[in-house]
Image (cartoon, rainbow, N blue to C red; front, side, top):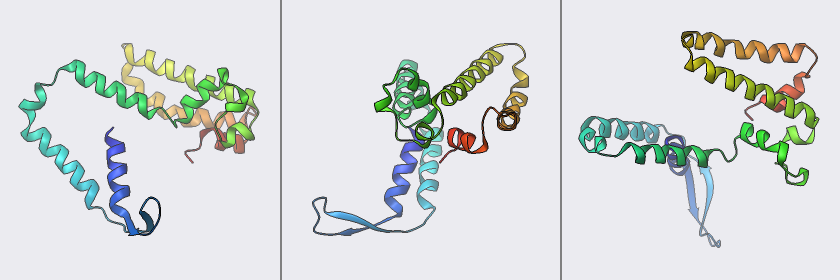
Length: 167
């Protein structure tokens, strides 16, 4: 996907490699910070959209949809929400090595995931209805719902941080 391309290019261009007598032959020894690579990637994308429009228009929609479907499917690996959805049918010995599987009680993990699934379904139903113009309000209400779940006693602040943290 686009974000993977930018991440890989940025990681390779910011790494200072040193050739060593290792089995791999190289080792990362430092980090050189620069902003040129992401700008160049986005500039090339813009130029291809501007000057290759006729060529891009010839690509069948089925190919593009398949590409985006494949890109989305491959990016599901490592997504915590996706992992928590599958926890219900996963063998406990095969749980991912995450803090929420070790510290938080599993019924609270399943309840949190269930709440997120219900909210996701409601948002999708809302987007298909004539009232879709209130979508930003619903998105704005997600954080107050998170705060309410923490203050209502269902979850402690630590549990919410483990379940809803990006790190």
